[in-house]
Image (cartoon, rainbow, N blue to C red; front, side, top):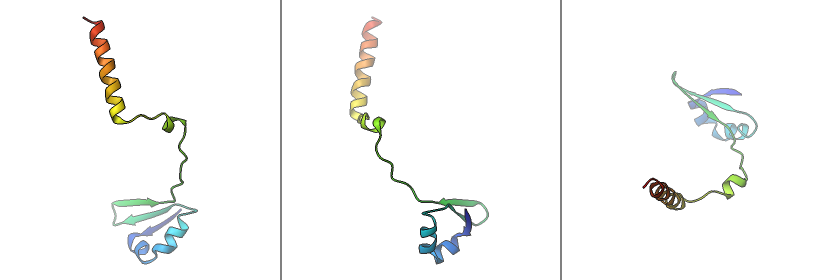
Length: 74
């Protein structure tokens, strides 16, 4: 892990982007702001992702479920 200033990052962007492929770069901006630069690995969709439903499918399912519950309580 390296700690650098935001000015150092700005002046040597390519160097730190290359380094971020193998280590974390901590960027200090002033005294109160800190950021982390690191390579984000691509994640393959997993089983949960493949089972995902759209917002519209969720809404329809929720409406049906609520209607069923309401009907049972009458």
